[in-house]
Length: 417
Image (cartoon, rainbow, N blue to C red; front, side):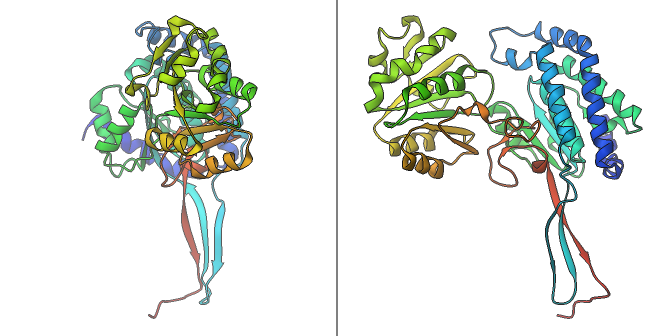
């Protein structure tokens, strides 16, 4: 057996200990981990600086890799919020007494060992630990090589806290960054209960194609906002700017604006704030004609087919002109990754049709897609945004990383048929 196989076995063995912990014990570990994170920020930031030195600052992954004092403080706050949330375990989801006297209860339980495969996002290391631990799960972390030094520093902080509580550090296992480790994790049947990939569409597709362990997809975000004929221009202007520029490297960032043809005279106003952030716009022929001379020339380009259905993760955005709500819905159906989609419209029936017809994990009316986030939804941190329909969809927080089992209490009943 390989060293990785043995390590995974030790992680699986911690489940018995984790299941015996009370919610108060789990919460105390998370609060102390948040405190230790802030105390150790100098060490973590130094490790992060080392990782950043090996990446081109123009790479869209650079912002995802970057840790700052402000970001560490926010992560610590999120961990404390997770600690304060009610336990997702032991919920009686359903109960009944059968005619034969058997008493049945459907009760929430941990998933078990959760493997997280992610790229250059060291914040995921902490989010995944906090959520998995609070929900009684052990976690196997397979981060990208770009963030390995940061991840090692972070996991060392976590292990120190676990050891102080006499909890085996193997409950949180950071795998080596090489591809061989990935292959072993994808094949770890019987040792890992579920895999959750978080990152680019390429990563997700690779995991889905090669995993022998069950997978919950947290998909890439190809995000649209449709500006309807009834849309309010001022609302639209603010929503589009926020959705595109709040943080371009995240999966809920806006990629494509769909605009009703009748609203093209307002297009320049809708996008004018984007120029302050040097957002490149790739517009179809009609939209481009309305922006010439009204949007900076060096930032305005004609759209090519590849500019639709692209997750830019950068200060870039496409615009497509449509002639109806149905045309917008068809474009979204064709190009959406089923992550987050939005409409800007004052007509209530139009909004309701959009909300009902769009097939995505999160669908908005008159709000920025930037809110697709577990913390923003009041769920604490998140492991990712699930874009699939089995088990969980949308922000994956505490309740989404539990399963259930049936408890049956009897008094000598036997089955006779």
